[in-house]
Length: 173
Image (cartoon, rainbow, N blue to C red):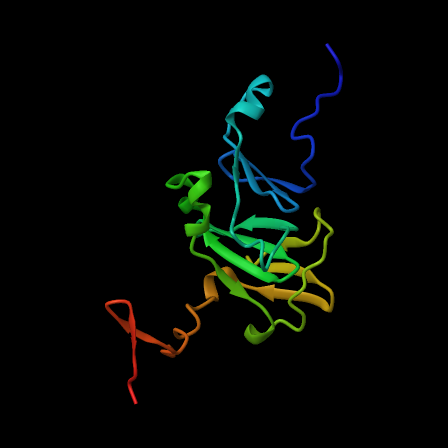
């Protein structure tokens, strides 16, 4: 056989990550996240792979890298900050439902000096000996300890602009 194989033509793949279970994950430009289940034979990769359109396209057209923490969360380096989501959400959704994934974004407002991560896939997220994740950004290194991140942000305030009753606008003033 041929010494080279080629998969996913037309996809700009920015990184390949293997989680602790052996599942391979790939981030691509404008095509989301690709998942290849652990143990997939080479001749079945394209039929077993699942591509998730992460519905971050308006804000995040590409994922530069990812890392899994000890609590089962994925952390993603992106050009629009750092995003976190529970890995197990991917077990219960279809690719078409990927827009329902619950994401938490972190950026300048959360203490990052610059919320644009860099595109060096092999080295844009590393974990040190104490469990901190180091993210390469356009203005240095952003460091976070996943176990110490608290739930953040209160819900946004709600502003009613129009009230409708039976399809007709109602004046509240």
